[in-house]
Image 1 (spheres, rainbow, N blue to C red):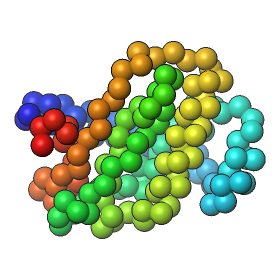
Image 2 (image 1 turned 45 degrees about the horizontal axis):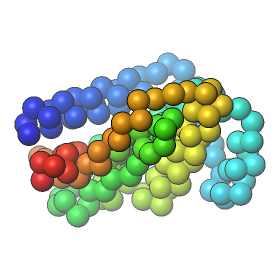
Image 3 (image 1 turned 180 degrees about the horizontal axis):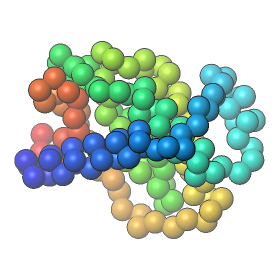
Image 4 (image 1 turned 135 degrees about the vertical axis):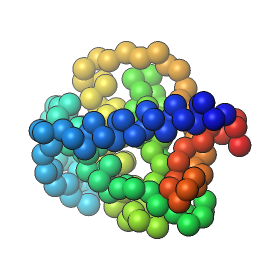
Length: 148
């Protein structure tokens, strides 16, 4: 369990740091109206647009501090070409505006799926196992469901 946990934690931290350090991050503003969102994205989706939105989402999550496990939540994040989430995003209701985060993640998932279709991407079709949020030293982390 410890090795799996540390691997997941290290991978999550690396992804967050790489996204946060991008020198090409754009400040992309998105509407809160789902109808407007759909209309805005009738054109091609770019990898830069996905990266900018992912960076915004990671900024919203910040450091997911929590006093207890009930403050830790999980959202499906991204879309695999065969369907289903590409990953799981752990966040804290203590430090994150849940409504805003859910709207941005929903948009990201929609655009990720559209990007996969537009680029005719293929994947391994493996199911990404859902994780269970947990608190370790005051931070929400992902633990595999099988280890709980």
